[in-house]
Length: 328
Image 1 (cartoon, rainbow, N blue to C red):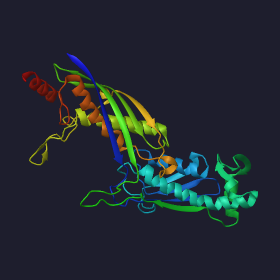
Image 2 (image 1 turned 180 degrees about the horizontal axis):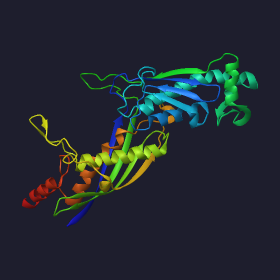
Image 3 (image 1 turned 60 degrees about the horizontal axis):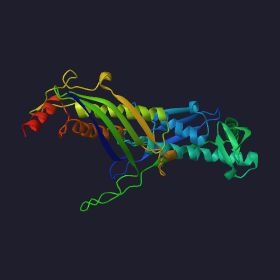
Image 4 (image 1 turned 90 degrees about the vertical axis):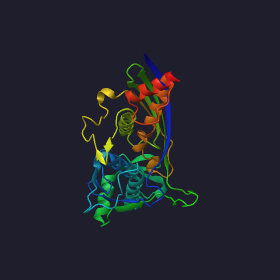
């Protein structure tokens, strides 16, 4: 018999290192052809940080994304970026990049004040032009930077950011270990075959608070990828060790989720802007996988009425739990 169940998993997650300094820095050089060199220590290992940091700098300077040239994670020339871990890079390196761009922008802004005879508070940069009180002027940013260069003014900036944290008291455990937190809820529907113990995850609805989605498509990709990782953790992945040696070191015996295991995933982006983040953004990397296993375990309980407390929830564990239930 196949039975269906629904489960919910919720999480909160601190962004960055726990109660420890974890700064990042950036350099920005705005060139007179309108292009921008961005140098960051942040390593893009597939999560898309090069793209996000370029978007943040482009937004701060008011230029198009394709004008940003990113050099990242080169220990000979790029500044400190810290580890690509703990879902920290959008928040921490993003802030560093924004601050570096803001510093480079100051020189250009001063030149715009002089050329347009308008107070700085009335000026803004967007779409490659200088705006006056929200109205587009004829002064292109590329021409503005060229004017700076003609006068020997270099539009350079550096910035760094370290989350405002405190260490944890060793006796009480109290402290402020993170600058910001991620929050999420996932709802999972499963189908359990009581004859075989097989679990099929049918659908996942994943709602994640990301502060502000700098790149919504990449946020959805992170949520989907994390959900599949959580599914594998909950139902497939089991490291077998005997006397300190791994018994299943290959992918023929250590099972990962494949495309055939992926359910329908509905990603819900919640944008509750983080005041200390770059344009309100914060991390979404690891939070995407944290609630999934708990939600699946709760859904299995809802389906068959027994709790399974160890992962992965394999067919053997399901059948053993059902046998124990029926014997009582």
